Figure 1 (cartoon, rainbow, N blue to C red):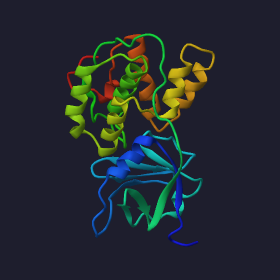
Figure 2: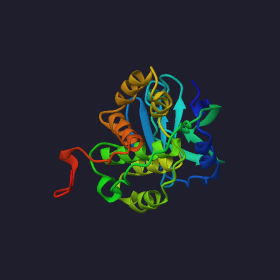
Figure 3: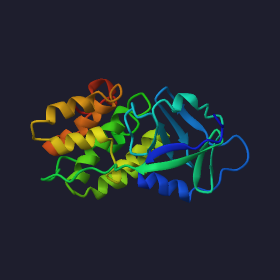
Length: 239
């Protein structure tokens, strides 16, 4: 197989727009790989975490979806942007189709208490701390119901520096109403016969991410406070 053979992907429109606006990577080692796993990898695209995921993985709204089994065959030793296009090990990435990442519109309003953003951002372990996932779910529910949250939005943006680059990127996506498809499916199914199945599918995402996204969104829609589990709360914080 030629090392220059194109890598076809499915891409969200905003990710393509960001790539097209990204300056060419200077000569040198290329973009930094933030994380590499068997089904997902993330690279630093100028302070923005770009995902490269297998179709069998969960699909973040900030990721390119590669073909089945393609990611394990990539060394990712040379990742760069040239002419508005991503290149992986000298192979150009070519979008074959686009996919939607936005929340569905649902009835009602999400008018729960404003979350303690400072007490949530960056709290918890893993690639995406649990506190950030809770906020992403809460924000997604408000976007789905077209309920504005200007003060919380401003607070989230002011605290992005306190978490990982990947998590900050996903919080920014949630502010724009961009979410995992499993969360969009649960929001769409809420109150119907398929809700339990969609909730189970969302909870199965990651170690704690899916469960935290579900809890954050449910709290917003049920107008309950968004809180961390007791083991993750700052000392002296109220339950």
